[in-house]
Image 1 (cartoon, helix red, strand yellow):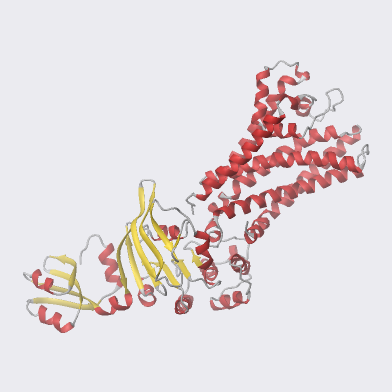
Image 2: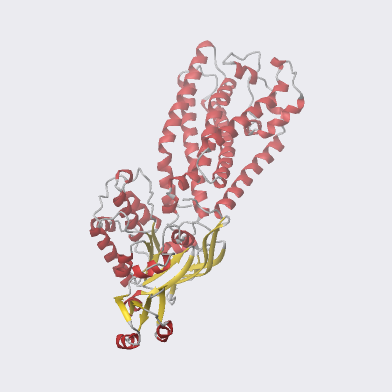
Length: 277
Length: 298
């Protein structure tokens, strides 16, 4: 890893870190405060809010950060400067990966801190600080790993693509595609819908990092009987069993494979790529 | 590395972009202390050659070494001693010239930031201005400063003078000549034949991706003359006796280059009934026309 490139990269992430942290913190805090006005909020509701309002935008951030990181230097032409310096392509890739992960982690830490503060200051406490810290920490670790999976996929795209064009579109397509796949996978297990969907749809959960990572972290959503009506979408998600439709061990293997293969393809392609300037 | 004669050495270096060739079987040597001028029209393959040397693109076949090290396998090691300024300068728009130069020094693990002031002063560059606010010429100065500030042993410049005012062009070549005197090797591409003739020690002509001529300017330029003669029933056999090379042959008019004693030339030509004669010193412009004027008319 190259420290000078690391500093240049972190500087380029500054604006997006501030923007995403502020917006997501506001969304999360406002949602928690609004829900708290109607009833005592539990961590189960936080997991719904995380799933709908935080995980999805952060997955988009992570995929875009990965997908743009390598190709943007080629599109901007700055790779010609970077690559005239004594730094190997491998070092360029790993430095960019490190900065993208760090930028994502900083956003998560800020949003997580705001979440913790909102709980402590505004929402009626029902857990000790230690328990609250552990629970929120678990939720945010889950979000971190989801982002990590999408980011490595983004890096692979960035190495393969020859132009920056359509990077955002591709990122959105991947995130929404896997999100929808995950959503469809839980339909057969939702009591609210009368379990009318074929069980084979559960297999689509293995296409969705959202589902697989959540199952690994043992994150459950509250029961339909106690759920409040945040929106229709979250109502549909509310079922304790939804994550257990996919096997944790298979999920772990798939997630590790996706990360490892994405990184290997990214490094392999980028090392031998003709840089377009 | 210290005993190397050739700083850049390529063997049958070829790069194809799909089916269209970039450069074909280029074998070129650039020696220590040389200021090598790479000449050719747009699309001839100059930038492709430079990008291959920098490992920005990979060769289709052939090899290239810098300091005896393979440019693909040991690229980052080579770049510890390499400075490069591209023709189309695109740096980080939100950084000042000073920040860019500081980063360049950091990349090379050098901490003498006082050099930034020295080089900016010499190139008349405002180090506090953001890169995006700079004019084309000033952007070029940043690129040149970034290529030279860490005192590299090889300096590669792609059309360095385009966009620079004449005063800075002179200063640039002063800096390059100083670097060459201190043991650095300079490789530059240019369309400006006057600056090549004036400042370079060697020139290479490239056409359609192939090297068509390579010559030392110090000897070749001073000794070679170009003769154009017009005569009825011109006997070409007489010209063959001279150490000459015909450049253009057009009915009664022949243009040829000659290296040798002037009296010998005049004595030989006295055998021909010449109606018109032009004798001039060899110029790169003449070579350029010879190589790139496909019609070959006088």
